[in-house]
Length: 528
Image (cartoon, rainbow, N blue to C red; front, side, top):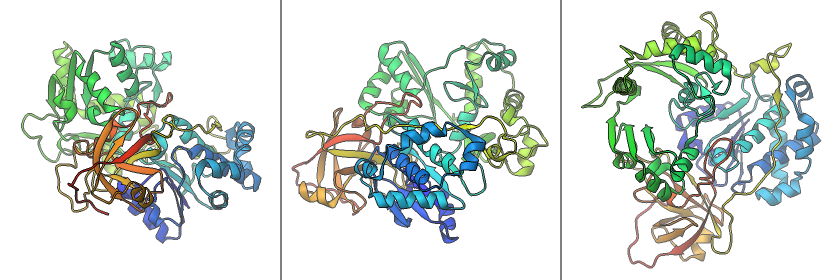
């Protein structure tokens, strides 16, 4: 079985979803856990329409059912984990009655789902931003990991934890050290020995403390301690929560450099724009996908105009700063990485070519790459450290509903849209509905709205006006906006910039809003 949790993969990850459908045709069951009855949920055996932000309550209640029904994998727990007793004590308080009150899901459905997951010979939990774009994002993920450890559904064929990546090579970016607390290969910046290894090769001192993540960068801009920014392939002037405040901070920088394929809204604010190539087609290198498979990328066409591959731009900037990196190529950089990151040591370009990609960790040139990242948990004796249970408690969204803001707004993707729309908005699509405020039939009737009527949406941070679209995917009290149309429906004017202290991710998924029909003779034509 598959628990598709906080993910509308049919719209956000359509190629992956086709693979999931093959599993369903082969007899797997799909349980979709999402506040909306999405396109993905329509394929599910059961849809669990939980209230926004109640994921931990649901996961903990499922854990209690598994334990009470004697379905916990006690042998795996004793062999491969720590902290089970503490976890059991926490979930003991999440009775089905309490969980039903917190989540809105009937208790018998929660019980059925927990038993089905624990009893399945193979089971996966797949999730995306519906889990991670909350002020307690990391705790949400830990609650899902606890379920997998409880049932032994991790580290073996057909069972596992599957965070679906939203962009190609986002995994590779993290692997290469594009994280504020990690060096390439997920090696801790604050570990003196690991940091020293990089310093010896690079010939430079690396700061001994973790850097800022994106949310902390904006706080530093606000405090005046961050005065210059180099943005590579990112559009924070549209993608940040409480975006009007973010735009003001970007405008106030002493220097803003943007390196991108397109003249994004962020690039329009920049002092300098460096036109970048499409590295997936116009440059050499590697990319890493969601299953940790590193694959070669080859240049198919030359970059147009003045556009240059990202690596070439960075090498040229280094030269302007007085550092001659010589004829640095992607392969030279990769071979250096292999000497510093043990998990990539066995991945020569020759092997990547010959084998069609290799999954890290790959320790040497005889190693095939680890098929299952956590397969070590099943080794006798246990390979490495045991996996800890990390119990978490439910807490509500920060942006509370009240009489002035009685509706919950959540965000997501459309099938034909991509992120802030920079890459997809320039192409026509017969499926495009553009920016709308989706709401339930019950709420539309209460507000005297039909599809196409203008509606004013107000949060504690800002206001937008856009067409309404009546949708059967939504329950009363819940509304939805896609993220792809900031020119027509600037959703992040509304969202709250409260962020998870462990991951730095803002709570895009749980905004409190009010709705008001705009008196206007004009209406827009939108899909129903």
